[in-house]
Length: 311
Image 1: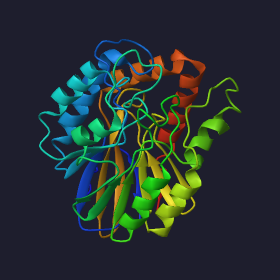
Image 2: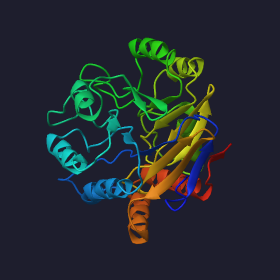
Image 3: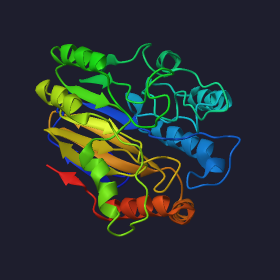
């Protein structure tokens, strides 16, 4: 039975439909224990991540998923804080790296590579395929490595990964995809908002999304969870539905509680702070920069439009 007390309904989807499986999606916590301020409310990032996991512990989930950006910028001390927070979790945790989790040229510290991330926060490799209740969870790295996308925060799924994905989808009955970066229909919502705020910047995007989406569609993968833009959003691209998860660090500080059954999948948004905390998040994010202000406006508009999709 869907936990209607958890929060507002973000989406009701016909697919995937499988045996009862409940999971949480915690996106972009950006844990930064030595930083303060900005729209990410760094001084509250660990608290919000802890709040999310504490609430999830009461929801009888089968696993916790994350589309990445666990840390501020891949700092070892922030990974230590993530590990301490995850230590009490008694269900599997499956993540894929975000663009802030892998080494980038601007880093002034040594960031662990994606291979380390895969062993620490997944089944040991990237990409990966694991059984999650009645679902086939497939995690992919769009964020790069120390040798790929090192000078960019854009995303891209490699041709090698796409070949692996096509083979994996041949045997997956109910695929569910986890990746950090977004498809164009979600990215285009940022571009469209520039009609309201022309000075708004455009965050990093997914490069060459068409081959990725086509492999997913051909293999029957109908739902992809992403993060990256820190707001709840959805779009359909070349036959594939994307649900972009909100962040726990910026307004509207929250995670997604998802439930799959033979009737389909429901997704609810669960706040990780109280009303005062949400108001603080809104105020700080809307005033941080023109771009942050635009993202805040988009997030508020999406929240007012819930559910974003109802099939």
